[in-house]
Image 1 (cartoon, helix red, strand yellow):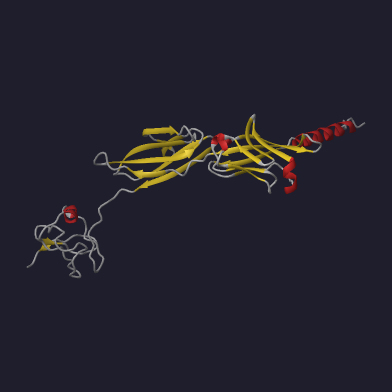
Image 2 (image 1 turned 30 degrees about the vertical axis):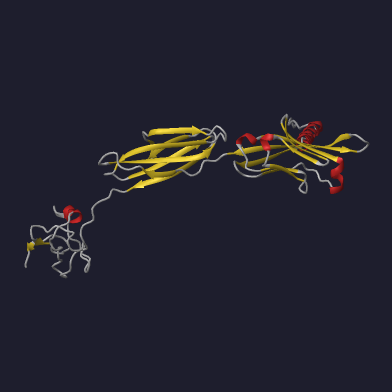
Length: 301
């Protein structure tokens, strides 16, 4: 005998009724969601169209929570101080509320109320709500050179601004967090937006690949910085391209100015890549341009 239990038809009916009720609550709530970023333009639709003739018999109110934003009555438009010079109603676009230069403080629930004069008195004809979310994203961090606090040490700074909420900055190399210095966080009291910066010192005698990471809320912005150890390039013959192999005088050749003539390549007879009077002669000897060895020969003439 089959003992399998089968769901009762009433269970399906109840489930269907619950789904219908949930849909009704969702669609009848009249609340829509709009997400914008700081300094953008927000257009919040009232979801109601009227003709130009009806404007004389209609009142339009926009409010945020319990605070008035804007009111349009026959022959008069009133905007509350916090929204002056950046808020208006677009009559031709579903009586939308338009907010320019968005601020973080603009986020919240806005409600549109339409009243019509039908029998000598105004009665509510329409109600709609819009939830406005305002994001403030940090710009991609910039990394700049602050110079050399000591001979073999370089200092760089990573900074970014214009974001919210409060950020955290870290320096990483090969996935490991480094010790930073002079980390600074400030917040603009008017816009509520943050600015953050941090400095990092490193040894210039090694190769480095750093990552500056700024986290705020669930979001992250980052910037990379690579440093290659700068090695002095050996002198090359300007004609044949062969390298004058390094000797104890190479740095002097690049940095000192003397009255001696430049070194000559014995293979092709040309001067090296440095112009006259910019290299030190190796004890009145010249380099030999060869692949594997340096041959110092007596300077002639």
